Length: 285
Image (cartoon, one colour):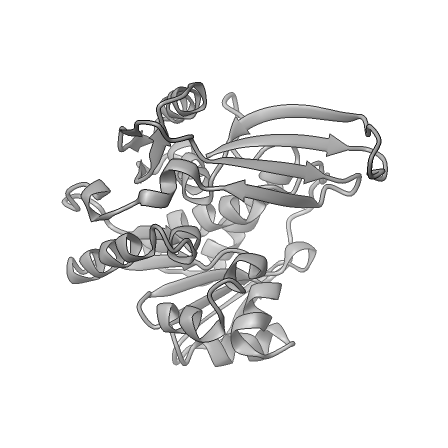
């Protein structure tokens, strides 16, 4: 995906111009996770599609600079996916996504799974009716290969398109769910994040809840819940912070399954992400 980010320093006034600092960056949840993993030293491969346009060529070239290997499926007569991101004075973002070429994702896009140790799946291709069957085929194939699946269900606004029961069914197919407090409340029916984790453990073996400025918590079935505080950061733009957190968590957890260490690594990358505009690592980090 291509992110078009407008940082707005004053209230938006409908019907008139509002000055903003506008920039473009690569985006997309899975691409963000892959980029943070690759820059942090863990090889990552992205399964995605682009359109036959300048945006597609731009985002693929950026992945190459990050060291992310990727599928090279270019869809004729289709636009590359684009997200318009509005960032307010507090760094909070509002997003307007158009999946574009990614809407046709299918099992044919999946590479050989030899050599991979884990798979991250964003909720966006499952929510999109045009890619849902293909994404489910990918999920089942990955599970049959014995690879753990880390699932981020995506925002509540998107999840409402398919409904609570459908998303809870998907949770039963994955090994780890990484989500924020709002998503945890929606999927569990529990306001307290600790209670939400307990409820979600009925569906999936490991639950990780991102709590923004309150840190993060995690719990595996049969184990005690663990929590960490947030890492201090100067917040410029929260876009992609959850993806950076997921990358840090996955990198550490896949190495030795220590939940505290994995949460801390995730929080460290998230703090780095919010300190600049855009959802990807600074190339010269």
